[in-house]
Length: 160
Picture 1 (tube, rainbow, N blue to C red):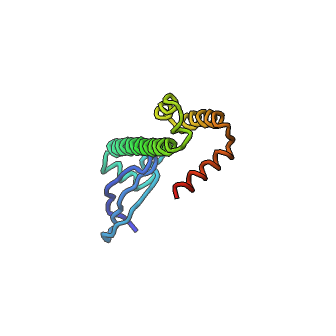
Picture 2: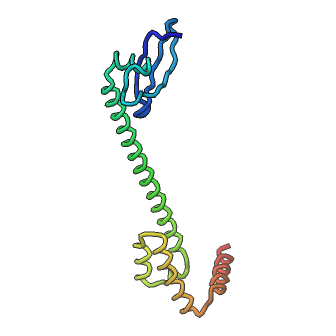
Picture 3: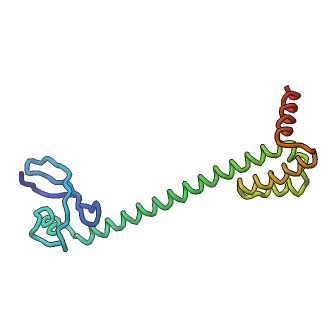
């Protein structure tokens, strides 16, 4: 079946053109074809039609422009996702700090320890500072970890 014209040519990638093929009967279909090596004319009738009726350099420039926009959008999306991830991490850190300040060994910790916990920039630092406070608390109370858990159980039963 012969075609009457090709409309809306655009590059899908540097080596493939996509366009709308209009058949002699007026029906249309999408057509994709490879660009001949070194833009050689006479190899592909569709390519020859594009070269005769459109400016290939403008089509390439449009592709480069669309590619740049696409990459910019991807970069912005990646930055947005990174900011969202950081916001979630900060919220988790804040929530963990709030929970920590409810623990008996933090309530009884020195002002320096509580200040350091507030300033902790991440979960690891927060846990290390809390560990130091926990070790000191156990030492001061002459208690081991199991004894501390028993103490927490007693507190929770008192609240009920």
